[in-house]
Image (cartoon, rainbow, N blue to C red; front, side, top):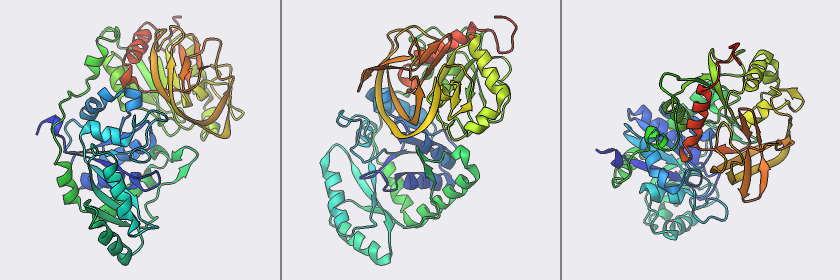
Length: 466
């Protein structure tokens, strides 16, 4: 079987809350336990669900976002992530046809399914309906004839009698029922202000939950029928995404002899990252080393650059603040002019404080929690040359936070937002680029190359050379 014919399914739903993550993660775990190499994917910008997917499969959870990366990169990124897999499962986002605001189908699960030529399995919350489920499925199956709605999994079924009524109703729909799952809260995943609690914060409990999900899926779903459906796909004509090929024409990379060490924040407080970022950094010539700002009191020896992605620093503010030696080390590295890329949580960590708890003090700003959710896709342009982006670089990004930073931009802002509103945002100071904006570097590989090239010109952390 060629890579382009990788067996694949898209797991979608009529709306959020129907149980997509429960079913997708359970299917990933069940097929993995059956001995298959399963490649996990998530439509949209979400970082948290891929953590559960990775736990279920033992492979990196990868995102497929047509707004952030462009429609032409969806199939190549999919093939890159699914290389060597026996089966690929793609969890959708929101409702099947919901996408970026005011952009039609852009970034919707339906669009990604069409780009991947993949059959869709619809997860339906059947808890408050019986015959109406057939009308709902019929509507979704007929809305867009280019979307192949090939099966349904009935979720939150109340009883044997309820299941019988649902199946009888579905008999006339022409869409087969591939599973029926009872209402069961035992394998639930706790949530908070930005969605599910990440795996890194509850690993032992998450392992148990994923195991229970796999058991429920084995009991309630026809795995053989689902696998046969996954094999009924055509070959994709695209070539897999190749970070080396993407980066080479985009920017000058570090010389092989230089190989600067770039430290990447991780641990429970900084869980948001796209797998392709580390791959691009490595191809650009960096040695990528993770560290945990909650536990490590110093940056990795020889650090020449720093990447601090998203996460939940507001939840761990007291512990991050208590690690004064690392805060000082980060501040010293930033003061040396070394390149530092900080997104959202990283932006807050570099500020003076979060809810009054001292942080690194690199940026002249204070952060605090609010009740207001800031959420949505953005378009932006780099206003000046900096360690991450050349002036004029245009990117698409995503904001997702319940914090505010005062002020929200420095004298030299990181980005000028151009859509859906016009404003400046973030900070550029020395080698620091800090912003609320999450950007997928696969869409703009030059960001990784520029960061590594800048790091190669920087003295290692702890060096007396300035």
